[in-house]
Length: 282
Image (cartoon, rainbow, N blue to C red; front, side, top):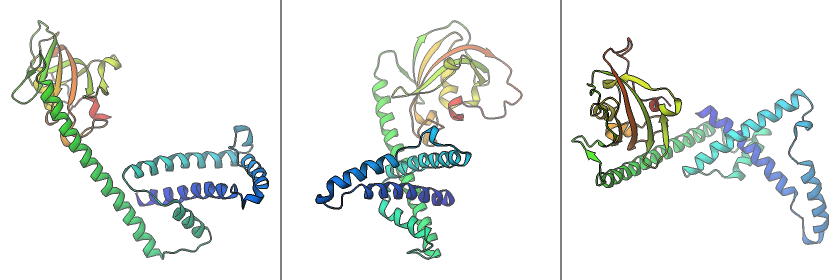
């Protein structure tokens, strides 16, 4: 991260420096020169107008602009995320650091500079860890409250493990065992309705050994007859727990609509490999 951080700070500082210089040029010296300053501002604004594709006449100009634009967007997004963690950089000091670097002078020696970057890296990591812990705690509390309320709804059954389910439609086929292969269609959402995975949207059923998926699925699908469609509410401990998975936050209660299409007796050749829903791969 250290090398990325150095590049990010430098580019961010260059962006701030350019912006700061333009703003300084646009300030009138005093009220008596307001009219003159206003004319200068217009001229400066015209000169500083964003480049258009027609203004980029050479390979070098186009390349330089594209690199700068890409870096600017990356740095802007990076610094915005860091500010969300409560770490806000002083733009004036960034600008001073860039200006000093360009003329090869510094308020810090190399050892102090290295330490400052390491300290900043550590600060960001600590802030990110704290935010993740706070978010996980909030998610756990929100999920617990959701399940308590959901369990009271008509048609919802709660198993000994804490799995909740309701029958949307009941099929007449056989029920699978944990060791069976099953073919299903499903849609998974968070409790706020955010969809994170759907075989229905992909128009391609999922097929897997039932004992190779998350515990809530292994338990829940065994309750179904082929042809059935159930809605499952999985406590986080029966889903992806405190680790989360891909776009699924830590300690999330998950909601799945599952349709059991068929049961197959034979596991695939790679059945020893752990299989989870596609959400875990994203």
